[in-house]
Image (cartoon, rainbow, N blue to C red; front, side, top):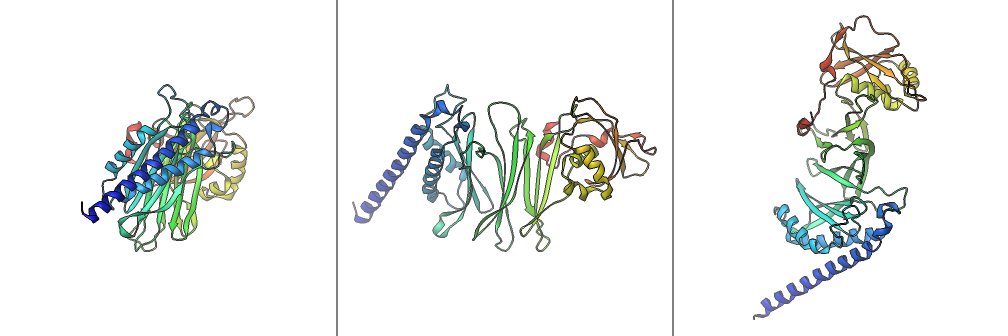
Length: 398
């Protein structure tokens, strides 16, 4: 064998041995973690500092493999090879479907523009705790980690395992920094109501800056319960970054139980502001107006005098029942009727009438509120409060 070929063979053998050593170390860590499985139900979903060690062992091993993935390579085929290598690492038996401590979920790999997104999953009680990493092209055809998001504080009151549903990237023009959005929730064994979170970072050479970090209680009725997009109008110089999120939220209407929630933001530098649409129907707008703080609701109100109504109706508890929305003689006005329920005994109270201006497509303003109906709002408008969505991937719901 020629010296060069021999050297190459020896290098490949050494590299393979190093990879085996990393996987052996990962497997040993999983075995140690799984030994604590019986404690998981009593202590914070199984959250332990060893989780971070394993997360990073897994991440570091994947990064050694990334050298084989070309910038224009097939990330799906690469993910298949990664998951095939990791299948033998699991130490959880098939009968332990509710306690996954010590198992690895499938690694998913996707690409948006020139950003590679790698999501890993480590089993805990009833779910997986996801970590997500972003990589950009590095010199020599490799990949460089730009950003990461994972939960490494396992104290009982702070540990919120990530269940990543979507990661979206917006790349600005002229080499500007990418913006990364994650959508996810805290899954679990029971209930379809969980906390949904949405976060947005700007990633530049100085590091990642978290610009949006919020959550709400949502109805997780399907795997795609939450959808979102992030982008920028490339026809306008220095246009802000546009963030749009939609999910199913609890309604104050005890007969309906849920409604479509919309979160729409513009990011300009470090400044983030919420903008229209805030709802997709007059009834949902009243729901959003009542459950938001006055600082937000004031921006959607025609007069500051409506603050008194907001304080009176919002209080610490808002529940009741909506009646049919009525169309008014003035074309862009609607009357929304709401019958509040008493917080003490849940008894119905006198109805309240909201006068809402609706200008297309979804610009709502609270014009006035009264304890009596408006005499010029008498035409029933059932179509006003039909279910709507801003994402065509959601059309299957209804």
